[in-house]
Amino acid sequence: MDRVDAKIESVCAGLTERGWAIVPDFLDGGICQDLVANIRTLQQQGLMHPAGIGRGEQLQVDASVRSDLIYWIDEAKLTPPQELALSHLHALQLALNRSLFLGLRSVEAHLTLYRPGGAYAKHVDNFQGTSARVLSCIIYLTPDYHHADGGQLRLYQAETAADVEIEIAPRGGTLACFLSATVPHEVLTSHRERYSLTAWFRR
Ligand code: OGA
Ligand code: MN
Image (cartoon, rainbow, N blue to C red; front, side, top):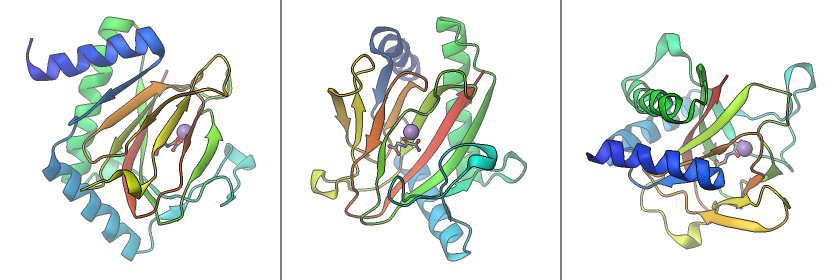
């Protein structure tokens, strides 16, 4: 089994056994760096916008719930590093469909920036039946991450929604993924710029 297969295998096992998985070094440093540069450019161009909560006409911006800035990736105008990152996610999608029959059909993704003080309160990405999101994937991009930088992704146990399951360091290159309908999670306050690419696979 080569390295890529081993990574994908570990995602399948994690999702089956506990509903989440972490892959350190999912994306290499060069691509992460290019995506961070991409986000900085978008921010300078005024294209990173406060993220909303809810759907459709109910969409609201509430910085006390979430204070990240996002840019929805447009498949019609991908930059080279965006294309590379999406191709890695696509390989994962195919493997998960083959092994777990998840029936993942499409992806929606945004680039994400939390500035110092930014956070996202506890939530679930897909309340049962409200959207087609099946799997949430976050690829972290921040270089030289240290624990004191904060911004950890905290997952809660699906059954109680109160007990902490794990805290994931948003270290550049790491992929975190979890089932969108069942895993409550939050982003702890970040103390520096925190960069990521967030994607959802839909049915
Ligand atoms: C989200 C989210 C987690 C993270 O965007 O819905 O929960 O670690 N992101 O960025
Ligand atoms: Mn979320």
